[in-house]
Image 1: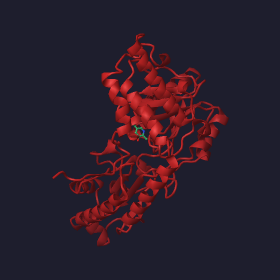
Image 2 (image 1 turned 90 degrees about the vertical axis):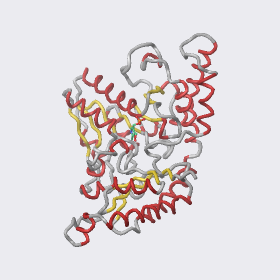
Image 3 (image 1 turned 60 degrees about the horizontal axis):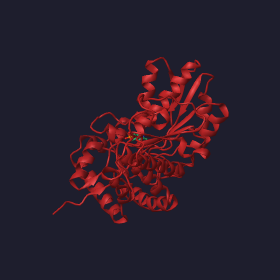
Image 4 (image 1 turned 135 degrees about the vertical axis):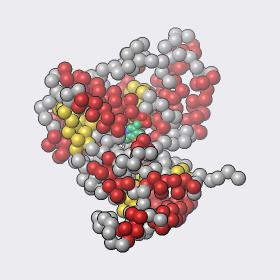
Amino acid sequence: MEKRIIYADNAATTRVSESVLNAMLPVFTEQYGNPSSVHTLGREAARLIMRAAEQTADALGASPGEIYFTSGGTESDNWAIRSAAALGERQDKKHIITSMTEHHAVLRCCEGLERQGFEVTYLRPDEFGRVTAEQVSGAIRGDTCLVSVMTANNEVGTIQPIAEIGRLCRERGVIFHTDAVQAAGNIPLDVKELCADMLSVSGHKIHSPKGVGALYIRKGTEILPMILGGSQQRGKRAGTENTAGIVGLGQAMEDITRDIPGRVQRLTAMRDRLIKGLLTIPETRLNGHPTERLCGNVSISVRGVEGESLLLMLETMGICASSGAACASGSLEPSHVLTAMGLPGELARGSLRLSLGDDNSPGEIDCIIAGVTEAVSRIREHSPLWASYCSGNGSTENM
Ligand code: PLP
């Protein structure tokens, strides 16, 4: 008999939906023309890409001409940051502001720029993972060429005050980019309200395939091409377009923005029940903001338990989850996000992220609570960390 899987790792990636798959399938075998070709098949492919740009733009309150398709969130982030930096450098502006809890797609990019002589201010979040517009305001200098702050965090789900930060950047004349990879579909995104100059999204977090994403670039914002070659995408991003992926992304953007309030309500109810159930496990704490958090995100730290052991135990029960960021799994380094929020190493290493999505059902929540509770007690039976804590020799850090 096939083992039943409970997939609670939607922040890592999602299943391609039927609607997205159905939109994509004909592109492989029927609408397969090169969008740059002048014949009918080519023009049909170009039309599909235009339609996907419209769907993506509509979902973000943008115009289709402001949407550029990329290979995913990482490329979108790199493009936005490196272009703003290169353009800043031309005006002797070599200072960038970001936050300590960004995804590595942003952090590694900023670190690379530091090696090239840029100065980067990494804003420290509060204990819930939030930074403020005041912090950004205090960090802006005459030579600041970019502020990049994520809309919502991938590990702890904390939602940042992006509209306030965007407004401030607009007032101060500084380019503002936001990584909205985790936010898309989970909170309403309107680039005008957010005052975003650039905004990144990724297909595989919203039920379209891996390897496709988009960067919104506000009309009038100067941008350098990051991939040189043909004249695709208005000469800004060369290479024959991934038509099927782009069609999938467009469909997913339309699908996930159709009923955000309904989705938020459904997922928040499951999320809050899951949090409540998990916090009945002794010496367990919630990571991230109690209310300003993504509707599907549950992040907890469990004392006396290594996150990796917990994941393996859950795996045997058919529950798919993450410890910290998926990209960091396999590494024993505590998560940079939890560390920046001030969590001691022991608790940061004992973190578990469960991320709910459209495919989860309320019944699965009870199974997850029971599974995690049992896994924690089994691990603690053999955990020297837990034994040491119980005998009073361990860390006395407050949960
Ligand atoms: N930004 C955030 C906040 C993410 O969560 C991720 C993926 O985990 C990325 C960027 C990278 O996106 P992609 O996997 O499409 O390159």
